[in-house]
Amino acid sequence: MRTFEEIRDTVRAGLGQLVCDLKLENVQLVNVFSGEIYPTDIYIRGGRVVSICPDAELEAKEIIPCGRRFAVPGFIDTHMHFETTMLSPEALAAIVVPKGTTTLCADLMEIANVAGEEGIKAMLDSMDRLPYRMLIEVSSRVPTAPGLETTGATLGSAEVARIMDWPESVSLGEIDPSKILFGKDEYLHKIADTLARRKIVNGHAIGRMGQELNVYASSGVSDDHETVNGEEMLARLRVGMRVLIREGSTERNADELLRAVLDAGVPLDGLCFCTDDKHPTEIRQEGHINYIVRRAIQLGMRPMDAIRIATINAARHFRLEDEIGSITPGRKADILLVDSLEEMEPVAVFYEGRMVAQEGGLLAECPVREYPAWIMDTVHLKNPITAASFALPTKAAGPKAKVWAIGLIDRQIINHRLLAEVPVVDGALRQDVEADLLKLAIVERYGKNGNVGVGFVKGFGLKKGAIAFSTSHDHHNIAVAGTNDEDIALAVNEVARLHGGLAVVSDGRVRAGMRLAIGGLMSEKGAEAVMAELDEVNRAAAELGCPLPAPFMTLSFISLPTVPELGLTDLGLVDVLAHKIIPLEAEEPEA
Image 1 (cartoon, rainbow, N blue to C red):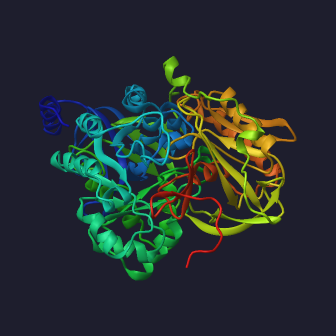
Image 2 (image 1 turned 180 degrees about the vertical axis):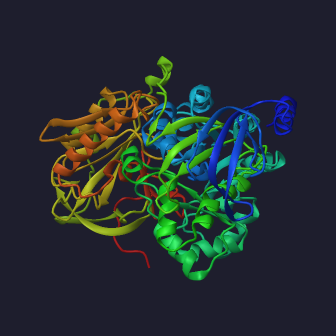
């Protein structure tokens, strides 16, 4: 918020009584309020815009000739998770800031599920060193599915209310429909406390339509980033929810939603952009929010409209339009200089009036700080993990048994509930590698109970070996998929040895691994090192036959007990819409 001193100095600078810090000379200003693009100069002092008047003749300590480049407001990611980038907040700067993102609205639910309020504080300790703005969507569901999973920590109503008072907190993080539709007072209290502070509530309304969606919206939920088609988008806009158009690594929703927007002539003021979960390699190759802006323009949207969605729409949604989202007097000077609105590749990025990136790279390194020892040691297996840990005894008499399996859907985090047949060998259910029916397991990693949940998944395509990951939403126990129990056990033990991370194994050998020791979720290394390691483990997974472009991102989501149709936790197989544990074996398909 603006202080008296900031207001006084901005006014005096505009009157010529104080010297400005910076003049961006000869820009084509993209004004998201008026919808105009026109030539002018931008004057900045104390990190805020002083003037955009073409006739202003103010003194400035530094003048940067801009050669009629377009001046665009810094982009805002309205919903993301640091943890699934595998990068610390410091390391992430190197790949998102040069792409033009100057504000990240982060739901820290992953580290909160591991380490609670102290885990969130450990992340916020990085804020002062970052060349971008970190805003917090206070985690609403820690745990996500009480009674259906084991987590490392909990955040009750009192903790959420306390964190909501932090100046960095702008909303209540994504809250799924089960918390509302099943009438759970704890979550209604969290919503009420948030609304009382005039902050918003983020949604997660995957698969909900009709009266269920109306009930959900009536609780005070403001948006949904889980919209996957035009019908769902329109339904959410009708009940007054904003749609956060998402483009992540596995959640590729932008093209379908943008086409629906253009085809149906949907009003744009209810739309924002977000990444939710995107691996650094995809950000490096494609872009960040600038990628979604570029795709919108390529599909036929006017550049001004695409830019508005990425800037002022987002700022208004979080009630921050007086601070960010535009290049106008008094606002923070978050500015991108670009040669082409269609290409949307920043030549320079300014954050609060300071140039922080140029020609695709940061101007100054943002080194990863030393994180506390306790948060680097969160993976503890209560019991020894062996091949026997994943055995599935059965009473089935024949050579095969019917089971419920999770069927992956390409480029989506939702899944199908499949009725499949798997072999029965020596009284136990086994994988059917030829049919791509692999075992999927979740191993409790907080040292609390030693639970191991085992099921089946179709879609990974592994021909041999196993892959494992200590990020599995939202409980973040160890998720593993594999063709045989011996390699599954080895992969889990390798992740534990790394204190969290990724592992690829086959034929009793570790083929590749990657350490993610910060909460078992993030690396302490820089972005380039992490991307190189991620490329290596992805290649190793591909060598085992996996065709997925982001296999570990997929692995991290298929256990989620709040995304239809099935999830798997350390307690067993979850029917997501019914919100209950169900038997793995099934005799007849559902009617």
